[in-house]
Image (cartoon, rainbow, N blue to C red; front, side):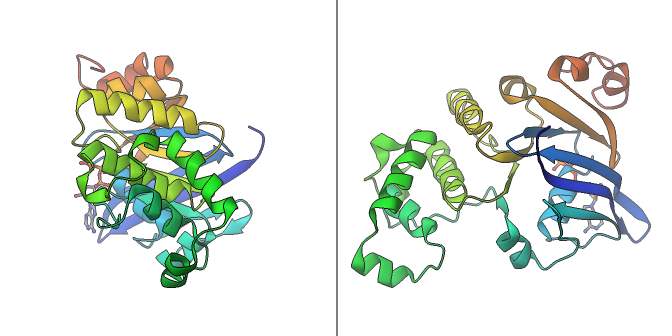
Length: 249
Ligand SMILES: Nc1ncnc2c1ncn2[C@@H]1O[C@H](COP(=O)(O)OP(=O)(O)OP(=O)(O)O)[C@@H](O)[C@H]1O
């Protein structure tokens, strides 16, 4: 690992005696794609909530680079470089795909001023780059309201990417997608490898096999195992404790 982008040290939350996340430590390298896998209720979403500041932790610490962000307010954590993609899209439905990206790219979004005076060449270049990354170049001039579910999710991802967060959190990015859309999402995520630091929470194993480098398995709020896809698939503790006797499907 060259540089560490995100450090989680002994992180936990106690909901009136129930430890949904319990003493979790992770180190995510710059440009790494880390998959967090776990059964329903394992604590995956809660872990993302703790990192992004949606939920306050009761133990442990979180750092972006060397900056400690533990229990900062959510908006301040976002400004410090944690970008999170939710299931519910935040795209402007009445604007084109391109215009959505242009607006999201503004660091100081005087949105109206930008719409009136147009965007600079740098923004245009960056928008073209992100359109290519998310596979929506041909849809650039379509109104966002007319995109399919999958395309809307890719645009949503593009809106995050264009803001260049230090760490991107993706919670079940393929939820509700067709098989073809899921496959395309894996291509997009693979294109992002090395350029962005990403944590993907997922339990669709077919998708995980297509994207994963290193997997962290959560079980009952704790880290059960960490390793490559084959290490995780062949780990007897994972098979037994999390995936049931029949193993990973
Ligand atoms: N605010 C809360 N108060 C009490 N318990 C909570 C709270 N939030 C989550 N939990 C519990 O913590 C556990 C972990 O939930 P979490 O949503 O993080 O799991 P998950 O791994 O994301 O599961 P899924 O795949 O179903 O989304 C669950 O048992 C859940 O009921």
